[in-house]
Image 1 (tube, rainbow, N blue to C red):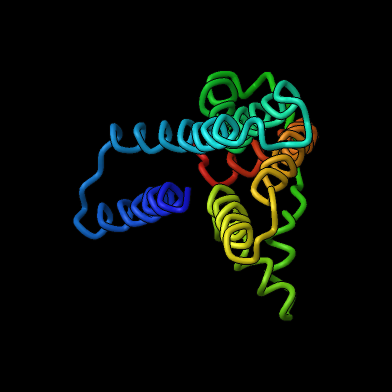
Image 2 (tube, rainbow, N blue to C red):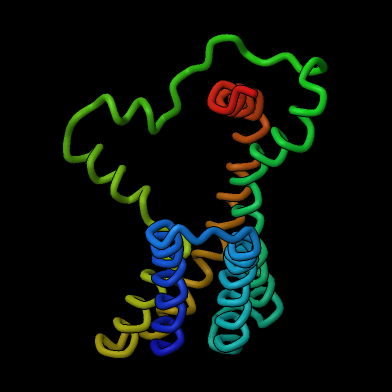
Length: 198
């Protein structure tokens, strides 16, 4: 499992580096961007599905309940990713074609990130730094440290509990993002319209 996490970390690392290399060499490819998006949608879900099947039978829960929790985590990751990119898709697919049909807010409020940038302090610095990391990277860290503690500190079933916790947390994050997205979509489209005035 640790070797598998190392490969997944390599996937994240190369995903970060390839864009920098492309910008440095001035090589741009829409096919590359397409494959990049497919990678973000498929790999995290496969990670959770594989981990769930590897750990079944080791939980205090029945296999059916454990598999359901793991599959919810596996499904939540691509849905969270899709939710992040819905505003630009709606902007390009619907709003630009018939902008006269939609009413957007005139004055846009500052986003949480913009508001944080105006403040100073260690907490703000920590939150801004944390925001730079991918969700999947943070999840890999949780599972990696659970594996290490389970192996060397002899804490039994820690990876199982980490998976169960993520299996409950990730669907809740998806639900939260969906509700927030519903109430913020007009503001996000207004922000995009302001940035990319055509």
